[in-house]
Every structure is written in C-alpha cells, then in structure tokens.
Image (cartoon, rainbow, N blue to C red):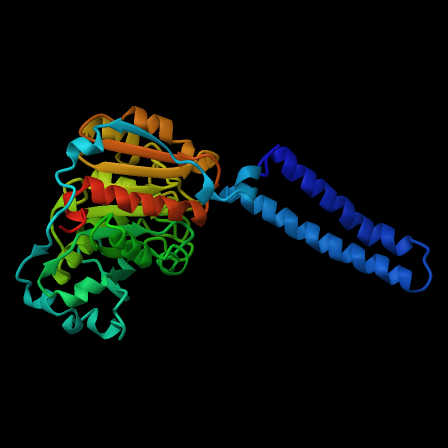
Length: 390
C-alpha cells in the first residue's frame, strides 16, 4: 500500500472521522474530575487537528504525486542511480563538436548596450557578477497576448559586448511562476555551475509566465475558451512574439542549434511541445517530469482532447522533427511516466530522445533539479552552440 493508494487515503479519512466524532461526542461525556478532564479534551482536539491536516496532505499528495511511494518519502533522489535509454537517432551522431568558439558579431544599436535597452535597461541590478534576472512585460503583436517575462543574462553577457549567446526558454509548471526558477530551482546558478564544470558555455534564459495565476494555458493556441477564460494563443506568443523580441533585443545566436526549451511538470509538456512543433527555431528540449499530450484543467479545455496538433506521439511519427529531447523523471511518478511509452515508440530519426530515470523521487523539485543539471550537460554535448568554449 503506497501513499497515493485509495485504500490508504480512505483509511486516513476513516481514522480522522472516528477521532473527530469521539472528540465532539465521546470525550465530553467522559466522567472525569479535576485537571485530567481538560488534559483529555486538549489532547483530543490536538489529535483531531493533526489528523485533519494529515487528511488534507494525503489528498493533495494524491492529486500532485509529490510522494507517490514510501521510497520517495524516505529517500533522497540525489542518491538514486540514473538509468538511461535512447530512442530514435543517437544524440552522438548529431553532435558536431565537443567544444565551440565564442560567436562574435557586430551587434545592432538596440543590442549593443543592454543598459540602454528601452525595456530592460531600467531593471538591471547593480551587481551582475553572477548574472542577473531582469523582468519585463511583452505585448504580443501577432498573438494579441500579453505575458510577463523574466530573462536571466550570464555575467559574460555584460562583459563582452560583441559576443552572441545560445538561448534556453524555460517554462514553469501549473500552478507555478518564473519565480520558481529563481528561488527553488536556481536556474542561473545551475548554468554558472555547469559552465564552471566545463559542461557547457554560458546561455541566456528566457522564462515566460505562460501559466499566470489560476490560468492553465498548456502553452497551446486554443480554439475554445474555458469558463471565464478566453481562447488564448499562447503558442503563437511564444514561437513568434517572444522569440522575435528576444532575437531583436538581445545578442542571441539565431540558429536551431543555439535554442533549446526546458520545463518541469506542465512546463515539461510545454518544452517538448514547442520544440517538436517548431524545430526550425529550437534544436532541443529538456523535459523534467512532463508529459506528451495536454492535460487541461477543469473549466479550461482549450482544444478537443484529440486535437492532433498537440498529440506529440503523432507529431513525431508524422513530422519527424530534427530535435533532441532529453527526458528526466522518477519511475514512481505516474504523471510523467504514463505517456512516455507511447511517445518513445513513435520516435524515429532524425528525432532523438534520451530518457534518464531514477527509481523513486516523486513529482517534485528535488527531482527536477537533478534533471536540469543532467539536461544542461546533454545540451553541451549535443548542440554545438551550447558546447563548452575552446
């Protein structure tokens, strides 16, 4: 019996209900004199409160798969052995270099000095020695959508004014926000560490807030709105408005081998979907515990569930996009593992999929951190513009 099994949850609910009834009905009827009566009542109230809290936790755990097994609850994901499988084209057969020189160009007037950028300049912090997160809001001219965006620029971006950089577009889960990449996942520091270890070169990170508040866009272009929710054109915003703005305003290398996506949970779905549907822009996807067909939240059904545009197993089988997908999850994560067999079965060259898993860990940040670190290393190995500098 595991923490997410229905039997376990009903057992917790039943025990909680019995203790609650006993506290309300039974304890007051106990014949006690003096202070012992109040001790019994106090202990009963505290026990009831703890059991009510436990009930809420196990129900939420069932819904989110944070700890789907006892192993994920008691173990440390970092101690687990990583198992790797490959599908489609071998990433090594597509890699063009183990190192790469810096790409130097003459920047445009808009790109030349980030401090003079009319949108970003005023938000740059004084200390950029470890890189800098810079927020802005983008009104999409093509999509008609408006989203907040967070950009992380490495320290070298501020130091070498003629150097152009590869890009990682990172997507938060649902619910989630770009702040998760700052505080919990520490994306900028993870890139700094990977560069210092010789695994990759510096990269720009772009984090659009495409799951704002309680809005679950699934990053798609919707054909229908949900309850009190319009039919968002989020995919168009990402692939056209945001990519175009980044290319125009920042010193980025504008080739698929220099652009990758990344994301955890629902953001992992966004990562792989965007890369598979736009291989002319993105050469790779890092997917931490995501899935391969949209999971729409209640009241936010953006498209028919069988809309073939967003069934990635069909897309890779028919379109054969030239992208590298790196997928990382724990074996006991049902959300991440349910779609995986059908997806990898559809993969053929030139699409490349590397799947790395650990035995336990659940659906949580401790697993995603490992997946990000290993994914960054794969980017440095598989895409030439992410390769460590010579």
